[in-house]
Each structure stands twice: as C-alpha cells, then as structure tokens.
Image (tube, rainbow, N blue to C red; front, side, top):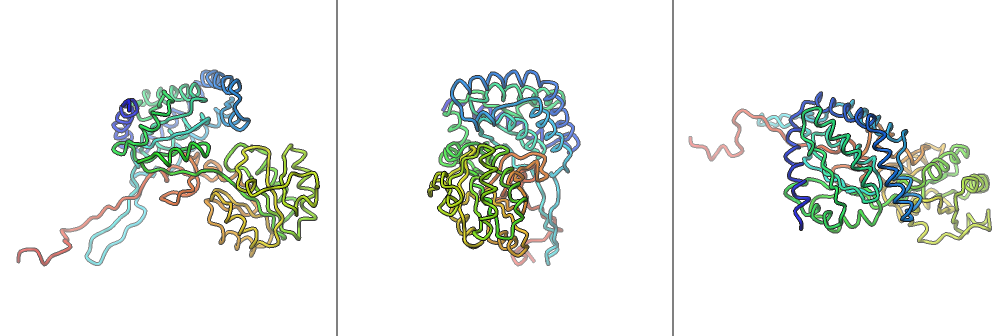
Length: 422
C-alpha cells in the first residue's frame, strides 16, 4: 500500500475532533456558508462538470450514468438548498434519547455522539460530495470522499467550495478530505483502515458495492440495487395507479428508487393494463410481460426470471399479472432488494396487509417510489439508502450518522458491595 490514503485519513481523523467540539450553532453556520460558497462557485463547478460530461460521452457512458453525472444551475441550486435544509435541522449531538433510574439509584441515559470518520465511496454522483459532507459535518463527523474518475473534475470543484467555507469559519479543511487519485488500489487501502475509519458507505452500482463489501475490514452500510415494485391491487384507483407508474418509471429511470417491476391483480387487469401499456409506450418505456400481460399486447417481449430480478436503470419495466395480493407479496419476497415497494389500493385492509408483509426499507401506500429519498422524507439530504439491517435502515440523514452511547451517573454505587472492607 502507498500510504497515500492513510495520510489523508489521519488528517481527517484529527480534524474530526475540531468539528465535534463545535457548538450546534457553529456547525449550522458552517453549512450555511458552504451553501453560499457553492452558489458563488457555480460557474467553476459547471465548467468542471462540462469537462466530465464530455469525457463520459466520449467513453460511451450509459444514459443512466450521464444523468447522474450531469449538473446544471438547477442542480447546483438544489445542492445548496439541501445544505441549508440540513443546516436548519436540530443539532443531534448530546441529545438524551432515553433516561431511566435503576433500583440501585444509578441514572442510565442514552446520548447521541458522532460516529467519527466516515468514508464515502461513490461513482458518477457529484452531488454526493456536497451532501455527504454536509450530513457528516452536521453530525460532528469528518468525511473522506472517494468519488469515481468519471466525476473527478466536478468533485474537485465542489470540494474547493467546501474547503473555502471551512477556512472562512476557522476550521480544518481536512474535515472534508477528497481522495483525488481515483486508482482502485487506494480504495483497497481505505477499506483496511480499521484504526481510522469508523464506517464506509458505498454509493453506486451493484459491482462497486459488492467490491467494497467483499474487501472491507471496516464496517460497511450498503444497498446492492433497487428492484422496486408497484402492485396494483384489485381495489386500486386506476388514475392514481397510472400516475404512480409513470412517476416511478419514467420520471428518472436511472435512479435506485425508480420502478423496475409492475404487478397487476387479475381482476383489475382488463381495465388497467391497456391504459398502462399505452401510456408507457407513449413515454418510450419497453415492457417485458408474462403471459397475462402479453395477452393485452402480443407485440410485447416475454419476461423471464432474469427480467424480474433486474435493476434496469433504463426505460424498461417487467410486468406480471397475479391472482391475489398474496401472490404479489410472494413475488416481491422472492425478488426484492429491500429498497422500495408500492401498493396502489383503496382498500385499507389490503394496504395494511401489504405493509405488514413487506420488510423493505420503505413501503409506500398510494405514493410514488420516487419519494424514498432523504430530501423528500424530511432528512434534508441523504448520505445513502441502507438496506443493511444495522443501526440505520432506509435513507440515512443526520441522525443515522450518530450513535447512542450510555452515560451513567451514580453516587458511589458498586456492583459488588460485599467485596468492600467492613
């Protein structure tokens, strides 16, 4: 190993103590300055992103990759707005989440403290540079960022804005450290730093996340992919279901909370599927159906087991007709990635049964899968979506970047008083 990443991590670890020592008001002010510096540096950020986009297009990057990579004025303003929303959230540090007095008189409290140093490993998502930094700093952490080579110029330009804000607030730049050299050997080095890194969060394609999970010695929170389902119940409102389908599949197909599979109850299929297939076709969506779906359009490609297991990240959806809600639930349990599942139904009992039976990180009742997003769920931004059942499950915001410790206050109590001299 070169030691390059270890040096960065050591500096970031040292800087974390300065961030944790700040008051909540100081960390809030820091994030507000970061948001303004992003807006002030918008031209430089967009110019750098233009370089990345040209290289990615020349390399034949996929439509989904290009969509995640692209920045424009609206997206930069969205990053700044996310930073301000995170800044305005209550300070989690020092919060007492529970307090009890034991029979022996000791007071046992649980208190939120920072994780420490968080490593973010991500691909063509330059917005992650700003949002991960904001979430980590708000929670009193430092962050070590390793973005993909396809977004190197964008990430560096955004990091410069964040560093300018840290300097302006008299705080060490190393609290937001960017691994500028994107060689894979540095990822391997990073993943071995058990003495410095408290948590690694990979964010990107399934191959990246599996690489991190397989090579890490540090704790990892992850989700491999987003195979998200919409089940249209026999009691669905067809207009609502069509809206959920279009928003979930066609609004931005290259993201992890986009729909990949449509399940339709047989009783509603004759009224729903002809309309659904027509609107999907009008939006350029390819449908791959089972025999029940293909009965409504013989030109459709037949769906295979691989289609129902696929995260397309494209304008493609697999569709199946089911005989009951139980069959829909069984299908989801077989193919789920534990990300997001949706039911369209006006029957409260069916909706409740669906929610009770599905264990995914987000279950939506008559609401789009696209709402499984930290910003949309009130977190301001997210550092990722966890489908790992550890301390966090679903979109991870500020609170998920803290941990609870025990603080015990006593008056001299000991566990074994019989050992004391008389």
